[in-house]
Length: 509
Image (cartoon, rainbow, N blue to C red):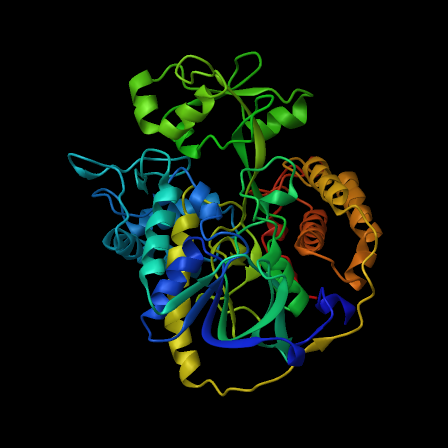
């Protein structure tokens, strides 16, 4: 019982609000779900932990995949997705993604999203593992920012949607496997609140910030997975994390993503000797962390026009990507696993739904096909709203109260130092190259700090670190259990895929 909540509270003593839809998160999955839900006539509140635009969507570069080209089809898109997923994709979920995706993207365009075009129409490009040119992009390499812009604008214009920024969701309010709402900390007013919702949608994004080197925004600390797991929801495929192989690796420069689309346009990965290589084999076989992404053989004008943001950012560090190879290193990028859902976004808790990177409907399997992530948020956000129309018709309201008074006082711990230790540990022991000994060391670290689950948290920073500890433990536990290498999970002691491991690992508290 002590692990269920992170704070002592009593809902009878707190201000409370009632909504039909509570959407947690303001990236593509959250905002598209909110917009679609508003069309049903229901009241919608979006809660986001920082500003509305502080999302993983806003940072996405490469694009959004959809079978819109004349030579393309959903069947071809499905085939590519299944191959990338290394035997663990849910084929029905993939069918939903690729068949419904084109119309969802058309809706984005109708909402005002401006994607790059040429004389033939949409300028579709190709990325790794795609057999066709099916990637829509905006301003070259600022696709996510364009999608975030248009969805933010449409939500702000919608009178049926309320967005509350700086509202940090502490815990779900669940009893007898039914979700009734959330406990929230209002950071502006420094106060706890209760938001009751008939439908609660997790769209809180990923967990890349668990790792010292990552491409994610600072909000990506795995909160949604952690609060769902504490409440009793099933989580799945936690070992499968995509480490992007090409992230800017310059002294004094932030870890800036060099999009997958750069290699899709013809760039090469080279080691310090100028030889092309596969990055995991290079890391496992050598002690060097130096690698380069080479575009110097490509047309400079094409490079500048296609990747203006990357060109500009590298130039700030005196790097001309048309002349100089880009020093890169792997960094945590995307979470394939998450809160387990079915094909309509339902979790194992009644009334709780999930979509986007926080969720795991089985679309990505062991490895996400490039640019399928933004599409997933659209397709399954829309599916949630279709499903909840029926759920709400039969909804029988119950007003239950919730309380916790068993947590001990918080300890005098340097949480900033603990967070840094966690980030370094995850990179070294649970990163792109894993081993039994390293994963066991990681789990010993989590065991050492396990007592924090029984203590109160004093502020949002402490809550965030405790969520990171919980999710990091799940990742390490699943990685130790899977004794093979598959997709985004690589074990040096089990370097090959094993047919009997073509199955999922599911955790439930």
